Picture 1 (spheres, one colour):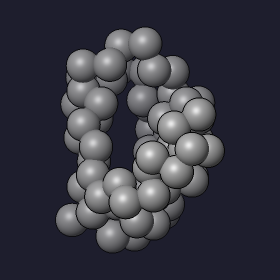
Picture 2: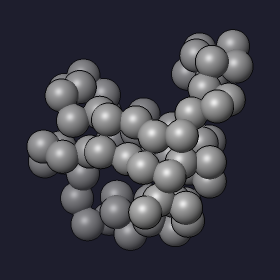
Picture 3: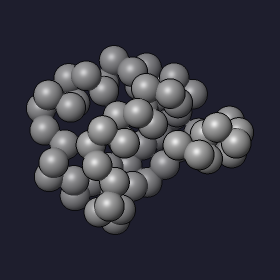
Length: 66
């Protein structure tokens, strides 16, 4: 997460990672854990690897997503 360390994600409000096949579920979870509270939107359609376990862990970390 070099972008996060460099401060480039400080004002991140939403993201769309629908067509990013190279991101693993652990990378996505790290992003949600570090920036989830500031997000108001997230698009993750077409990610078959994101199973029920992922969503049960991720949803509480996204309190402001509408």
